[in-house]
Image 1: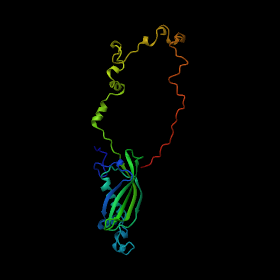
Image 2 (image 1 turned 30 degrees about the horizontal axis):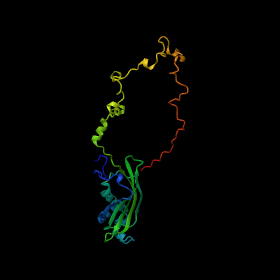
Image 3 (image 1 turned 120 degrees about the horizontal axis):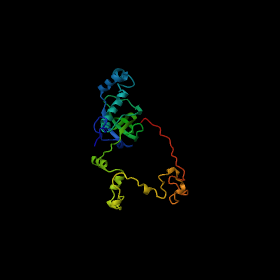
Image 4 (image 1 turned 120 degrees about the vertical axis):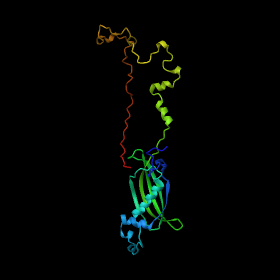
Length: 273
């Protein structure tokens, strides 16, 4: 069952959750081919430096031709990441990246193999219900034989992913809600013969509802105060020693002789991840 919150990065029902992204996991994000028109159009719009947009100047330079904007290259990585992982995973936002490196020029027609490696995972300290996953993304240029020739991009970043929701069987939830609670629940599980008061005669069993205290049973007649004398005036000597509390008797509320245990510690600093 998928809950409304268990959505992938593209809004579809999620298949993967934080618990699935374990350190050591490698996800193949496919192969992308650099389109010449798209590469130059991106540069003209967002990064119009001459070696990204002017073919004549770029050809006469050490670059030997137009090269892709690094931000176009990382955009290709991001699209592959969304298509092959975030579209399936219960992805939330990202708290940021630690590294972004352009290791070699990218040119029109290059075929780039994309992958992401899970480096670490732990529950988020900033977002309850999410886990923080540390990832390394790479893009490698492929040769004519589809073998990697050169790494052109590397990035290290973090992503938030929802933990897997706990599914509750409606029948079990209804049974839990209908179960008796407290002492009544405990007595209901006992055999009839073992329930409290089962061995008392019917005449001695209390009726349902509150039970009034019997003053004569609670206080021996020999020590009951006279109606004509206020209770404060009754001397303590009138109390028989059999019912007087012993001074030597230990108090039930006396604390233990052992030293109380003190628990101390400092709160862990909250990290925004």
